[in-house]
Length: 361
Image (cartoon, rainbow, N blue to C red; front, side, top):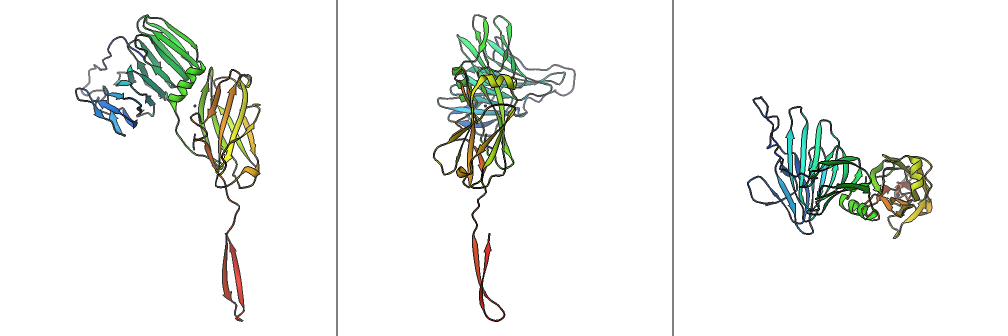
């Protein structure tokens, strides 16, 4: 399968004081790892010097990570939540197991920008913080920007976040497709995400690659403006030179299908074979959650076909799946070749007459 981000005015001390003979949580136990460092990425253990980070470096509570110019790092928590720390950024991570067995994690953004994809877990609490704001999260995707003396910015792709300004202690709910600004003077506001903010979110989020084809498929989520939609892509078994169908199912939609119909002005499947230079587009009308696209056999060539989904809204927002550079990162569908090879075997029958056996494979 190849397959669409806060902030505290006081220091936080993660400690548990209960009358037991052993601690509820071992602070030396890793809660995350440095998954993919690119460029200049360093980490620090409490009381030690900054050290160059490498893939698979374990992180425990209190550890700090920072990036240099033109650098970034992906951090993966043990429950599969993902952080994407952008260039010239720095975070501190904390973990605590409370007396009621709730595991709390806090990522403090000291400076810079942090993309996140948090997986919803039972009995777990996840917060992002800056010196001005706190975002309480239970399963969502977005981007947090530490604005320093200006405004912290939270751009939310999916889910719901309780966003608090710690100067005024004012809290607001931020939904997918919305952006919140938390100002140093204590005010906080929520607006619909602009195309520019959406582009910044998509650039930060990135996506993993993958392939799909045959009766298998690919799935994922993209977002645009005030809505988000997931895609599940499947196809029939594909044979060279023959028509085939690709089914695009709309899943995890943040708005009803009927509303989606009124939002989207153009819906198409782009495709090409592995030898072609340019993609062709097959448009379709959204009539339900599943939409079928027919690819003509004349364009079907082994060993594979490459496809991606195009969404265009009436407000001019373009959305694709896969969301990141789909022409270079498409869904790949294998194609069975119709060509056969021949093996000729010469032999003599009992009477001595020469004959030829032809085997096709």
